[in-house]
Image 1 (cartoon, rainbow, N blue to C red):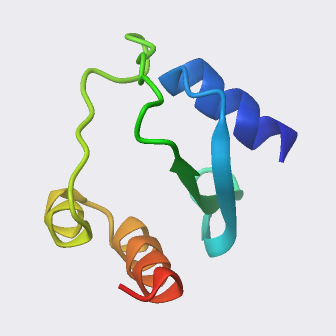
Image 2: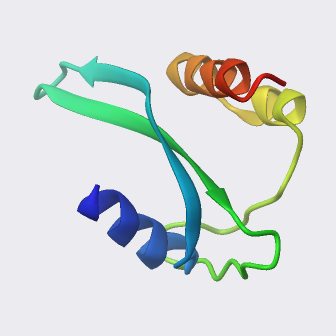
Length: 90
């Protein structure tokens, strides 16, 4: 959880998370090394300002879940977002 907060702060400048939604998705990459990636959701205040780390990201946008699903490339990320949508009851 400490790493989650640190990465969000470093990559987006967001410091005040309203809520963290855990266990959205977990998947493994086995080539060339075994790596496990965990997906979390976070809720932030609409007044919180996003300040991107330009080395990691070039842009962001707020959008509805259906639009986000169309923008995502990886199947695993889409599955995680669909699960978040179910959890939130939208």
